[in-house]
Amino acid sequence: MHRKPSYPKWVYSAFLFATLGHSYSSSSQMTVDPPHNLEIVDPGFLGHLNLQWQPPLTLGMFQHCAVQYELRYRNVDSEDWETIITKKLNYEDGFDLNQGVEAKIQTLLTGHCTNGSDVHSKWIQTSFWIPLQGEPETKIQEMQCIYYNWKSLQCTWKPGEKIPKGANYNLYYWYEGLDHALQCADYIDANGGHTGCRFPSVELAEYQDFNICVNGSSLARPLRASYFSFQLQNIVKPSPPEQLNLTQRKPEELHLEWKPPEGPIPSQCLTYEVQFQEDDASWVSRSTEKEVITLQKSNGSRRFCVSVRGKVNIYCAIEGFWSEWSSQQCLDEQQEDDRWLLFTIIPVTLIMLNAVLIALLFVQKQRTYLKRVLGKKEIHFYQEAIC
Image (cartoon, rainbow, N blue to C red):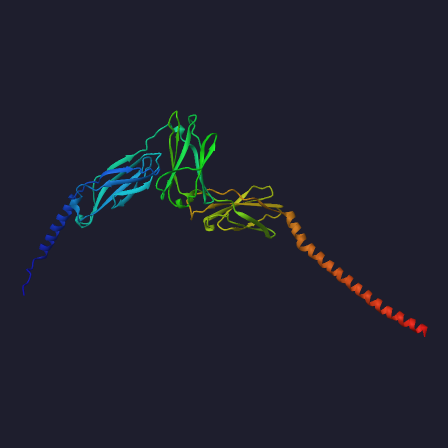
């Protein structure tokens, strides 16, 4: 049998050290080029931009390596970068087009060819700006969008401070699922110009970015465009709660219950604020997740009033608007007195009336009986007299 030659252990150690040292040296000296042609493309979706790039020109040298790209991007006024690691050659996200956008990217090599370490290329970067036209004072003011009762979207604004005479605003919107941006089809008008928009059914846009641009036109000079982005579930304003019912269970305890508003908002998505007032004291508020609450009434108060409003809770949205207050429900001490009369004196009176009727019937029955008896005695006496 052929036997392998035997070497001292220090020989193996030296060989292993030399091999690892060479590998480490190779990986530490390995370099890779950055991607090229990084650009930010605006497809016309009012802030939804496409970041795209091409692979390094020398990528063919690293066929057995795992090639990835580290992408960082932000609006120029933001201190924080968003970071994405991807194998793709493009990435999409939403941006505020009222400001500029900047992005940078580098190549990242990992795998056996780098002996387990990461090899980074240099960064390349680019930026993107929407061309600014018109003075800032021509932009719309106080833009507010509300998704009423989770089914009807409406946006309103005020004209800019320096809007030229005869100028008007136009609203465009886009969300994922639309092929292109659409113009408002139902404007709200005031003083001869557009001051808002009523939108058609937009249920498909829930839980995704809803992008809006309001720009303008004027023969005198251009108007500055404004861009907005939000998600519908975060701007919901519910209708007020319905069918409030306030009752007194104990002398100093009141029971209030109501029903959520009619509409598509799930009941588990609502939170409530209850405000109540005793006599002329200040209003006091309490919060609850249920459509029922027990309130304590002070001893001696004569009047107790309540009202309720609702809002989409943190489990279904990040933000939102409170509904209007429901109509007030009040409980007066006089009402309690009337109830006492209704449930105590009236039943007693009915019982007494029944007793009187029974007595009258008994007397009437006795009279009828006596008449019959006396009538028979008179007939018998008359017959004896004839005889």
